[in-house]
Length: 234
Image 1 (tube, rainbow, N blue to C red):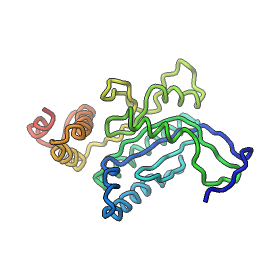
Image 2: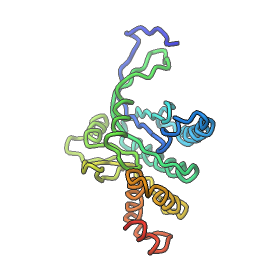
Image 3: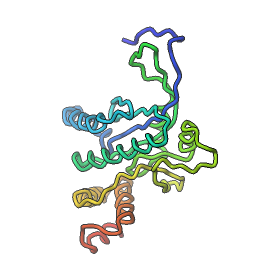
Image 4: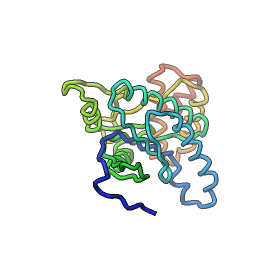
């Protein structure tokens, strides 16, 4: 039941929102018989990200929303670094990739801390994840980066990226993302498996190809034989 809240008791705050979506998870929601398995996966997803006190967390349908209220540059960098570690650990354990959108928006708190989730922060983060972040990463765009600089009260000419890496999405638009990659043979094998599995689904396969190309570019080498790698990338 939605509680009655006096409008005068609602406080408008600005925060950073990160919407996290498990790739391949939404399709499975159509299969009622798979709900038990999906519940276990989502529970694992929540546990990985629940251990950090740098943000508030809430599960919504097939994803998780993180709300970061800190406006300290050093804290934001640390939070993004921690998210990268958890993202990689989750992928290795559950064999599912994560895609997410980072946005700045409003959230409304009541003075008695009622559990109401209102504001445009969530919708902006979800929209960014679906429209801008085409790769299997947690990312954002130029507009959000500028807003993040504003809430941190940085100088206009400051080019701070909060530890995010810069690339482009499938439309050639600038994309900033959390670099979660660590050099790991199990991760490479999983990527190869996804690339091979999705040969008949090029729209899905290219998400994993992008990750693998970035991985090779970042580390300069792989644990797999050269011919094996070349065969996947060509």
